[in-house]
Length: 168
Image (tube, rainbow, N blue to C red; front, side, top):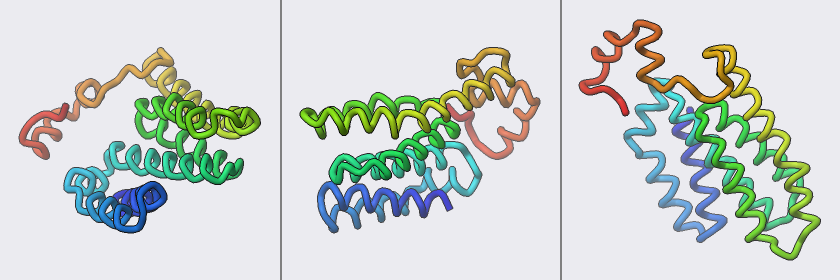
């Protein structure tokens, strides 16, 4: 599911930036990505992160182009879900800020709408991730990497049975 949805999001993002042919190439390359397909089939957070990040960036691009507040809200929601998939989703905040400032440097009203419409769902996702980390590890910062989690849950043998080498 995530692989297909990511391909659709990649198609729309590339099409809005560089035209139909670029969208088609981006969608097909994403759809035929072996690592994405394997991650999605196995239920890894990488697939959800890629999906929500592409959706976030695609909606952000459209919202800046169309000056649409509703698309900003949806983009912020996708960013919040990306953070819940992986803490590296927090990078979407600075990326979105730069995109909005470069895309509308003279439109202060739109920058203000971005702060009001995009940031709350993004910050809600960040807060939810921090709360989850606080409950899981006693610290609101991301603490547990994949290998640490596997060691703590005693599932290391199962990992070796599935993967020929340890993931990075």
